[in-house]
Amino acid sequence: MQKESCAHNHAHEAVVARAKEEILLPSDVEKVCKIFQLLSDPSRLKIVLALLNGELCVYHLTEVCEGTQSAVSHQLRILRDNHIVKSRRQGKFVEYSIADNHVRGIIEMGVQHLQCAEH
Amino acid sequence: MQKESCAHNHAHEAVVARAKEEILLPSDVEKVCKIFQLLSDPSRLKIVLALLNGELCVYHLTEVCEGTQSAVSHQLRILRDNHIVKSRRQGKFVEYSIADNHVRGIIEMGVQHLQCAEH
DNA sequence: ATTATATATGAATAATTGTTCATATATTCA
DNA sequence: TGAATATATGAACAATTATTCATATATAAT
Image 1: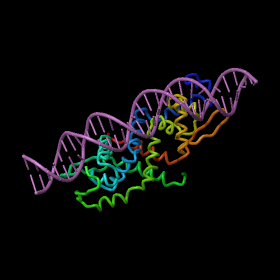
Image 2: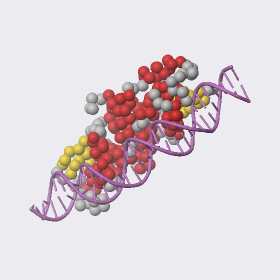
Image 3: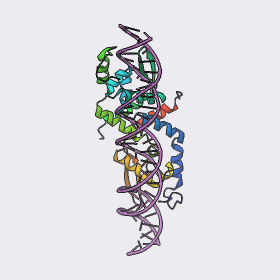
Image 4: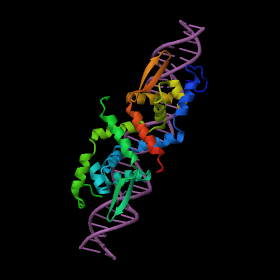
C-alpha cells in the first residue's frame, strides 16, 4: 500500500540499493525491451525466422508467412525502421535480409527455452 | 497485390517451400513470441532483471522498479502464470525468484545486442 | 480481537498496435 | 506510352494490454 514510508526494513534498504545498482539504466531497459517487442509478434517473428535462412523478396515472405501483402509490408517497415532487417531493390523486387546478427542469438535462446521440458 | 496467383515465379516456388520447411511450427512460433512478449514490457523486464540477482519480496521489487505496489503485483502475476518467476511466502512477505533459467540467456543476448555499436 | 502491514485482484480507463481496405508509387514489359 | 506487376503506405478499426483506484485477503503484532 505504502510507497514512500518504509515501515518495512526487513533486510534493510541495502537490498533495494544493491538491486538498483545491478539493474540496467532506464534507457537501456527501454532498448532491451524494444528488441524483445519487435520479436514478440508472430508475423514479425515469422519474417525474421524466414530471413535467417537467407534473403527473400516481399512476395516470398508473404507466401512463407501466410499473411497479406499489406500486412507483411507494414511489418517489414517496422523491422527496417528498427534496423532488424535491411532491403535492397533488385529490379522489380525488393529483397530483404537480416541487418542485425544479434537477432539470431536472441531467437536461438528463445527456441532453446521452448524446447525445454519445463512447460 | 495478388496472394494466390503466382505471376511471379522468379527463383521458383522452391524458395518458398524451402523457407516454409525451415521455419518453426506455427504453435512454436507462438510460444517463442510469448517469451519475448513477456520480456518486452519495461515493468516486467525490470522485475526480472532485479530477480536475476536473487530473491526479492514485493515491497523491494516495488522500490527497485519504481512502480506502484499494485502495478508490480499485476505484472508479477503475469510472470508467475507464465512460469518466469515463482513465489514463496516467508511469513509476512512473499518472496519472488526466477523460475526459468532460460530467461537469463535470453536477456543476456538482448543486452549484448544493446551494447553493440550498430545503433 | 483489533489494528497495521503486505500482497493480490477486479473493474475501468487509456494507450498501443496489428490488420484490413483502398490507393499510391515504382519498375518492367509489350 | 500504357498496362501489368511488386511494394509501400495512410486511415480506420478492432483487439490487446498496462496502469490506476478501490478493495479484498492474509499474516503479524499489540
